[in-house]
Image (tube, rainbow, N blue to C red; front, side, top):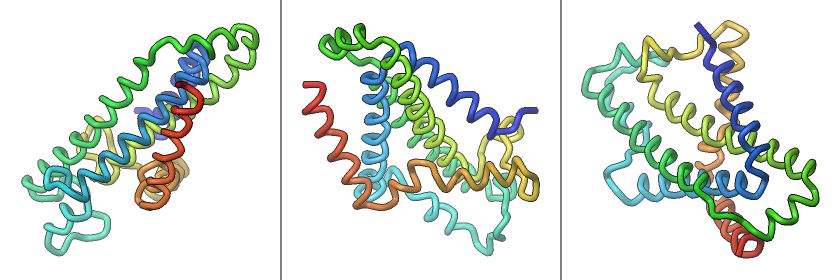
Length: 200
């Protein structure tokens, strides 16, 4: 059995290798697509009834202990947590997919040929960042849903080095910062300004 933290970093490294092959410009658009996904999820949570904050779902459980597991919850709550996870994951998947379907960026590509090593290194860094954004966002939503995919994917065990590291890293994932409305709006504005100035 592999630790979820180890699997996470393996995926991030894989995204870094993909980024090195694709170049920094295309990978940056993938990061922006995740920012857009977080903004869309925020809008749906705030103004629709289809995407409900996980806290509201868990609030329906009476006298829920602090360390309650997914299996200990009522079946209706389990199903709703799965639905809320997949609704968010689908948005992230779709927008990330279109982020990877970027057109040929002729000007940046021609310049990158002259600075091939720099483009590979920057592409790897941006690939690591896009992997951190995508996989970190999905992991955070899975943790918020109390890991609804057991026994294949289990929650980290508190009290163990890997378990504590996995629990602590959740505090640095994009949805945590997206909960700050001003920060999220600022990120969306910066992303669109960057696209307008650099890519158009």
